[in-house]
Length: 238
Image (cartoon, rainbow, N blue to C red; front, side, top):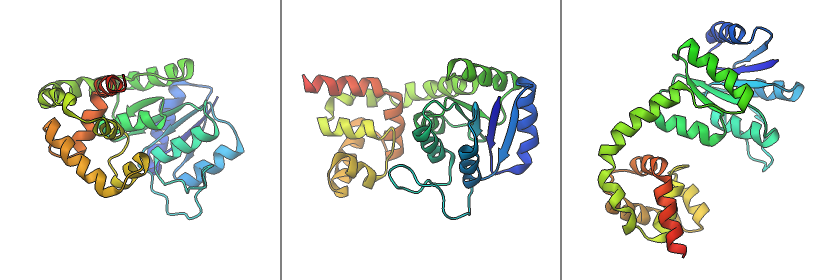
């Protein structure tokens, strides 16, 4: 059982390894503190499980390139996407100080099989490792609590916004759905094959119709109500 642990805080190494060994006594743990070292280890051998932080500082140049020829950014999200491009069956768990619903959703979208906060209980840590190894993915107690807290907030905040979905044009629906992945105007413009200023114009209309105050709120709304937005878009195609 080979386990790769990636965290730019080397002082975290002993604590994480002890936890892993307590859950998986036969595990051989390898610890690295930057993206380039992780890349090197992945080329030397296969790992049954990877546990990675999300915010990784890597000052070293010449980071690996993806199959599209793009440099891999020094953070856990991009590293996960790169690893899964090379080895789609890799089991990766996010272990981070972030205790954020938005970050959790972004991590799952990047391909992480589970999301854990570094302050999570040993029981949550243990159940997550065992279930990811057995089933391929797992909804940790950390995730459940974030979803529960998020629902309590959004039921109030987005109540009026839900009513505005029917007011969105087909293109505005497409843009809103894409916001669950990114709010960068240039990326969105490229995906929709329009000019960036067109994206700005769409955002103004979307925020007005959904009664939202920022692009970040649009992104959060899109994450929580993907089904409703998708259903409305499908209805427009009929």
